[in-house]
Length: 97
Image 1 (cartoon, rainbow, N blue to C red):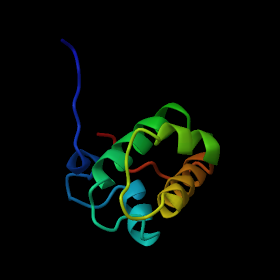
Image 2 (cartoon, rainbow, N blue to C red):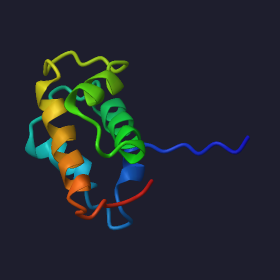
Image 3 (cartoon, rainbow, N blue to C red):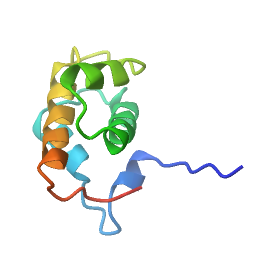
């Protein structure tokens, strides 16, 4: 039906290097148990692909359908916001899934 599906592994390049968004999650300690990580990463990627200038509040609302059991969302928002800053600065986007 013309749909495309991607997984977290699809964010990585052929050399399996982390996508910049994944790197920000790692550097921000945005993942603890891993329950929400895949959903948060893919939702954030799509959100910022469509709206790279999204505000923190827009990011928070965009991720609201994903449940996190551990972090309280602050570090997740920090990681996504850091990646959004890279996008706005015109820094490399990494891999497209």
